[in-house]
Every structure is written in structure tokens, then in C-alpha cells.
Amino acid sequence: MDLIDEYWALSLENVVFVQTENQFRQYNPTTGIYCPVQESTLIQQIIANLNMCCQLFPIPPKVRHFLSLKNRSRLKSVIERAKDLLAADDTFFQDRKHLHLSLANGVLQIDTGKFHVSDPARPVRQTLPVKYDPEAKCDVFVNGFLAHILEQVDIDLLQRYLSQVLEGINHSQSILVLTGDAGWGKSSLMKIVGSLVGWSRVGIVREQLFKNEFELSHYAGKNFLFHPDMPTDFLNRPDASLFKQLVGGDPMWAEVRAEDERRVVEGNFPVILACNGKPRFHIDEDAPAWLRRLVVLSFKQPGHEQHFGKMAELILKTESPGILNWLLAGRAELVKDKLQLTQLPEQKARAATLLLASESPSAFVRSVFGEEKGRRIGRG
Image (cartoon, rainbow, N blue to C red; front, side, top):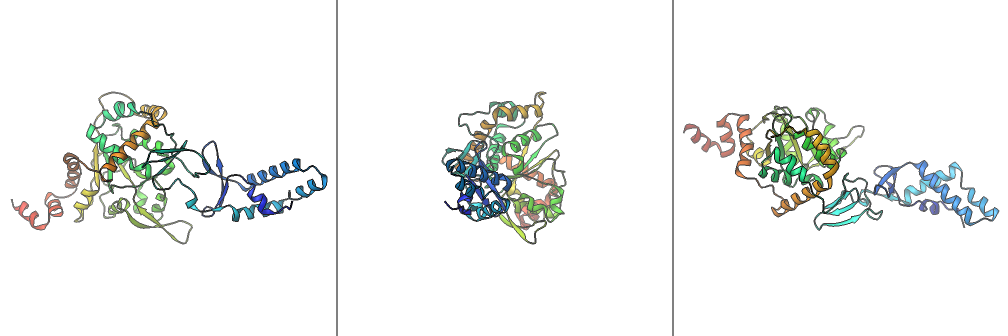
């Protein structure tokens, strides 16, 4: 038996070399993920395979023949050969495959409801930190938390909007704005949502978005974007129109630090902005566009003294699989409406009220209804 590099490279079990990352990954049966693995670890696995073969071929000359591979330069040669033989690109992995939701215990096909337990044949690099349990409920989350801070019709609207963070695709092409005083549950809600998805999949919206050309590149691959404490004047600037691109499906150039190239980021992110006051908007003859994009939920003062932070921790610990099912149910409702986020008249009116407060009434009417109708209403 010859000591060919190809044989020993292929003796590595469930290993791929991801060319776009320039690193090896190996399937971890505990997590169900293809995790990054050091070359030194793979060398130790090759040596272990060599030792096992030595036990199968005890004749001294053959043993020496096998052991001749156990030197630094020869093992390095095997690793380099493995980079070619075990090469894989991003399409090898299924965690970003359309309609496939990678979870802690397997992969769920969300359009059919079929669930497959973790398997190296269904390779993923990242999962949501929650297990799938089709029987799980979330009564405390819905009845003990949401019901105290939102009206039922707004809970239904929230459920449909948040369902989009599972795929990381903003089908409704809208921006969710959460308003209400501090301590009314906005932060606790987003702590639950962010922890369910995994904070590594969340892009935090900062002031640098308007000032730093590299900020946009940080959003690539994120499931949703979130501003945890938006100032009331954050969107009251000409550059705020960028948010309509972030949700409208537009391709956007993103500068990448330390790389002499640009990355194309597709603007289909669910965007959630939390504000303790009434946000103001810069309207430049585009009030109708803002009206189409905005979904405003007004949180109310809770009727009990329950500490929301501790409640959020309890909910995450006991009801995460149930909240996942709640979000999946919300997606089913969204699909029934052809992936459009329908709102009641009073819900639409909240967005109109915010926009109206951002500029003079006559300017708002002209922007929405047209110049002629605006003049007639103004004269009336």
C-alpha cells in the first residue's frame, strides 16, 4: 500500500475546506454544525489514522513504511492536498438555503413543515439557538407579557412582522417602529427576539450608518437590523431615505475594510427601531413612500409591577421553542396574505400621525394627495 497524500487527506471524516473562508470545517455531532477546525487538529487525526493502520499491519518493515509519513513536511503536504480534494463553496451549506431553517436540533423546511434531525449530509455552519418542538407553547410570552403592553390586534401585527426575522427576508418591505416610554417592555421584547435568533445574526443600527462608509458591510448576512434606543431625531435628516433602501429590496454598495473591493448588500432586511418618544422624519416630497414603509406599534404602560427583564430571562429559558412556533404561525398568516403586511385603518393612522407631526399639515397633505388637492384643502 503506497503512502499517497490523497488517501490520507480523504481519511479525514466529515471535513471540508471552505475556499471563501480559507479554512477547514468539520462536522460536530454535538452541535450539528460544521465548525472551524485548526490544521494542527487535522494533523493529529491523520496521525491517529496512521497509528490505527500500524496496528492492522504489524510486520516491522510495513510499520516503518507507514511511520515514515509522520514528519512535519509530509503531513503538511497531506493538508495542502486536502485543501483541493475537500474543497467546498458556500452553496455546499444549507443554513442559508431558501425556506430551510437551521435549528439547534435539525433543519426545518418551513413551507412544508418537514423536520430533519442534524446530519452531516445536511451541512450547516450556523443555527438558531433554539430547538424545534412542534408541541411547544408560549402562554407566558403571549398572555403574561405581550398582552400587558400591546392590544390584541397589535400583537397579531407584531407576530406577522417578526416572523420575517426567521428567514431574514423583509417580504413586507416595511420598517417596524416601536414607541412608548422606557420600562414598557420594548427592550425586553427585543431581548427575547434577539436571543432566539442569536445576536450574532443581528445588525445593530448606529449613528455611524450615516457617517462611516464601512458600516453597511457589517449588515451582510444578518437576519434583521435593530436600533435599541433610537433618538427622536435620528430619521429627521436627508440621509434617512437610506432606510427605505434597506427594506425595499434594492442592491446597495458596501465598502469592506481592508479589502480593495465593494460588496453588494441586498436591502431586504427586517428593520426594527425602538424609540422612547415620537420619532420625527425628514420628508422631501416622499410622504407616500414613508407611509407605505412604516409600521408603528405603540406600547402601553403595563398594568402590573412585574420586572420585565427577569420575565424575559424566564421566558427564554422555558418558552423559546414555543415562541419559535408562534413565529412560524405568524409566517403562515403572512403567506395567506401573499406576504403582504395588512394593517387596520387605525394602525395605518399611527404612521400618518408621526409623519404629520414631522412637517406642516399643508406640506404633508400636498405630499400625500398632490399639489392641487393640497391647495384646495389649504384654502378650505
